[in-house]
Length: 61
Image (cartoon, rainbow, N blue to C red; front, top):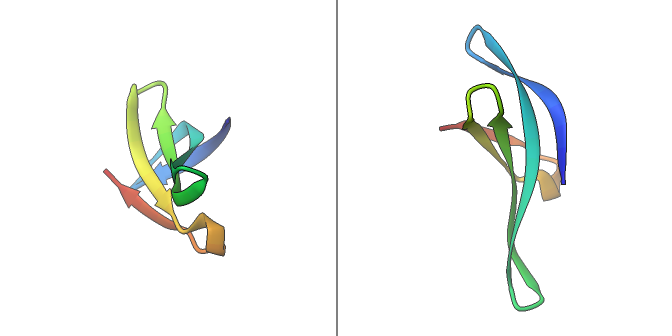
């Protein structure tokens, strides 16, 4: 599932797709994060951790 949004990195602003990534081991969810992908740059700009706890941590790549 992907949704479009804006993402600022420094003084630059990009249109990105937020793509949710879930890692499972059997039926157990091990990890969940979102990847912010810029179609214009054809690159992942950041990964967003901690969404399950309403705390977001943006880690630019």
